[in-house]
Image (cartoon, rainbow, N blue to C red):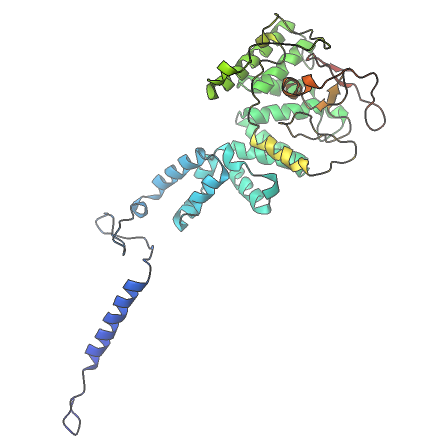
Amino acid sequence: MRTRRGVSYPKMNNICCDKRRRYSDFICETTTPCRKRAKSSAGTPVATVSGQCDFLETLPDDIVLFILAKLGSTAACPVDFVSVLSTCKRLNALGVHSLVLSKASPKTFAVKAKNWSESSHRFLKRCSDAGNVEACYILGMIRFYCLQNRGSGASLMAKAAISSHAPSLYSLAVIQFNGSGGSKNDKDLRAGVALCARAAFLGHIDALRELGHCLQDGYGVRQNITEGRRFLVQANARELAAVLSTTPSALISGNWLTWNPLPHLHHANVVGPGCPLLSDFGCNVPPTEPHPANRFLSDWFCDKTLDPGLRLCSHAGCGRPETRLHEFRRCSVCGAVNYCSRACQALDWKLRHKMKCTQAERWVDDGEGEDNGNVIEDDGVFVES
């Protein structure tokens, strides 16, 4: 188009195209590449703006779920699992799938007591709903002992026990032996022995030791000293094998296969001099790592004050508190320690208490001066009136 003086106007289409071209070039040079899923009709990886191919985006969801399930089952701490979920939106969405949560390892749920929050509770609840037995057990222990929600906690542990989870079976046996959450009349010794036998069949060391003492003493079952001794020896052998499988070189420097009882204490159940495998307490092996549930209980009640008269189990790796007065049984020699089970008593004896236990002239229990017959002999025998 020409003006009156004969000057032609520039074409508007060319100007617009030049502006669009320059603006698009500026955007490509100054902005970061977008992480949109690349699509290709041939199914091959498509190059992104940076020139690299994103192979993860081309994988189907079922393969990604399988990879995430493997990562969750081998996680050594909660951070390992959370760091994967925070990588991108796709992994964050697939990481909370029920298939992934059901395969998560116990260390994934090793939540510290100081970091406990409502979001941690919801995460454990979601994992337990997905069918993860470890999440059911840990959340059940937290609800039963820490949050004092006895019914819900016992139900979660029972859900894990139905799936043959040995720690849940043993914890329910301890609850039945002590009548935790109820009165002394709520004790069910036969049910405790049955649960202990099931956990012992699955190879649980504490359950084997507990069942051996029950058979030796006739506690909740017909007395059978020979079978009780066999279970105790089996528990000691399994305990030693578990330690040697993790640290085999430590046997050379450790004095584990010796037995040196203190002279002022009488060990009536030590069969065969100098052989700890035949004793009630086993070899002097290093303490095993506590279960995440027991570690949570120990940290939870470390900074909290229990109700008057209630005490914690004296074994440092247990963390169980009393739910009523005089629930746990105490040492009959010194009266200074108390335990929720024979397994905790045996472990604490060889780790700590055998060097501190001294004969007391006279001691009475806290409160009204009655112990309800809950006495522990330090030679491995529990006496129940």
